[in-house]
Length: 366
Ligand code: ADP
Ligand code: MG
Image (cartoon, rainbow, N blue to C red; front, side, top):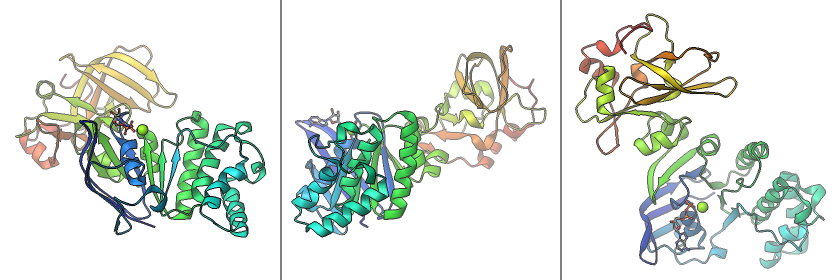
């Protein structure tokens, strides 16, 4: 168990800054997920924690000790990569054993560790096989087992499931969550996939362009996104963001300091029954997408703005127009720079002179 602290970390490659003034505390025993678009600096951040890359500025602390000058082998950090990086000529056993031999662990202890951990990750029947005869999922388990036998204080996993097909990926996600529970070790996990981040992390760190946008639990990231980037990066389809002119056209009241209003597609109530409270939208159905149980429509509003609506209602196959209600409590507000503004329901209500919550039927304001 170990807490990790990144203090005022900066990283430049040549003259180019890729990480700027990054501050982050990773709770001991947490499953922390770094998520962000490709190139935002996730791998660089992890490599600095592991000691594979030296930060240009700032300090890294693990378990109460500054490790900035500690070489990677002595940081008690084990890393698992996307491409597994297994030794092709060695058996599964050999791959797992390699690091232990290097550390000078005695034979009986090596055997015990290999036995326990192979059992834990389901590799016992494959110990004498070579990596190339294994499936992608089994290879990833070997990479995990190799990291686990070192009994590190911290596991660092950089997009470890990206090479697996969708079904296996979701199975391995579950296995990793269970493994984390059993080991209780700090896991730091990198992915560009927001669904993976939300389903695995107990702490989520959203990054963009080398800057942390928000670090919080998954429900807070979803429910109170700190800015427009996080609001639109997490969730599919992304949060709808209305500009001031769209807000005005829909009768969303002007609020001091509020430049954007957002709502999630799944919070819109499609074809609301009469009496439904909320802001009414009406639009031409521009696109429709069916995922079986879920239907996603894009509505083109009178202002020309497109908004997505997600529903579990049966597909509307022939209709061309649809209405939706946005409950006032589903609204998110952002300032001119895209940062979250806390607006209470009462503030919206007052600004609207009560109008924002007036009951309206499907034929209401358009
Ligand atoms: P991510 O893992 O989020 O996709 P990376 O941490 O790999 O992003 O990269 C962040 C930025 O740093 C990218 O612009 C990338 O091109 C740059 N970068 C990463 N490693 C190096 C390197 N060794 N030399 C120069 N630039 C690098
Ligand atoms: Mg990367």
